[in-house]
Image: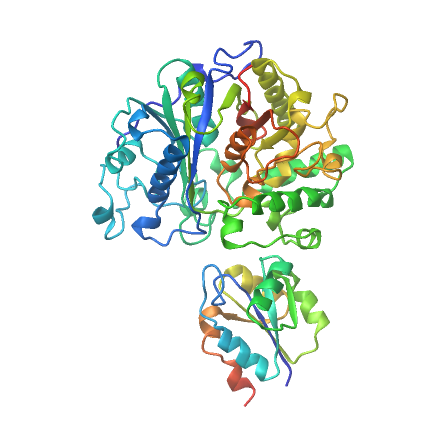
Length: 116
Length: 443
């Protein structure tokens, strides 16, 4: 089953500003399971790319937050998930046909159950 | 609540026909002190807006090379945000009183700049006699201090502004959106929660329609702003997010109020600035080269509807240009750089055109976005916003003034290549602005 996870950065990932609860370990674990991963944030795309590169993670995509529909078009997956910390994340995710998880829900890594 | 007199209205140069400013070349800025920056307050006393203010003041005094006891005046802008803030009666956080002495206003040093709080926490300021509040904007504090020095009310005056940014979202749940009911002007303009940049976006759209321009033409200005800001070691981005924006990044930005995208909006931060303003005579004994004030001027909105119009922005920014040139005895072509306000980026060109900056004595309105397509860098013939402004440094409304002072002193981190003899800075909106002309020479 193909799963694509889009992470918001600020307030969601541990290297965001403010830091969120999703750790790099969690991101790597998802990647090791073969998930398509990347970020959709209000940080501009070239900055998102630099943030991932600085942490030695090769992501599949970076995009502005409102470009979630574009990500859905570009990648074939069975499940599309966006994880964020604001109502705006939820609104944009739902509009793009993504499942939405709040940052605190993401911290439990529910996707590990999905692949069992 | 302790408060001090605000600037007398008669001090503002807000009409044409006043002639050369009486203080022209007799007042100068010398020492400049800038605090560290942060994205938000972490609620520790030592990183509060007040703490940052004290850091900035001490740095300014040290930079000027004078003793704290020489300071005999303070002008402060008490407001320290335009965004969400605490109720004025919110008590300080636990431990606050173990770090700072208290005054009777509980939010002093937290969400309000307060002269009395500064004085009780800086015992080395032993001779402050002149105290005034330049309300609303640090630009007002600069023009107030310039007048106070020119009028002989203070000879060595601190000009201070701190900015706080609390956790949460800057414009969410505040003001009209915070209550159950609406009253006053907000009942017309704020009912449905239009984002702050919406008014600017509408006028920008009208501007583009009138002159045949478009939002994409802003990109070179945005890139240049960030480039200049990243040269400033005191700016938020250089300290915390040293990332260069590209044209593609800018054009991919999410619309906040189309045609204003997220990167047309400045990022709220915590920071403080203090500047020493003094007489031309005393400035000779300060360490930095004096940055002389040639004049100042003010515009305020005309009575009209609930939102400004393109026409009023053009008329009032034109008036600002004429008042400044009259008061300083110079013309548009004498400006070596401009550091007018940019928060939001989409109104910067109104200021620029009001000053006829880079117009070569020929152009009327509607040329600024074409100018952005030319060389507007610090090495070019028309350095636009060499400070990087709010967009390149974080939201404060003071980077532009700070850099104008440093430019004419010859020590800006983004120093323009050509001689920086005369420049201008002003904030904030095109129809509501306080500006100064700065010069390397009093003449």
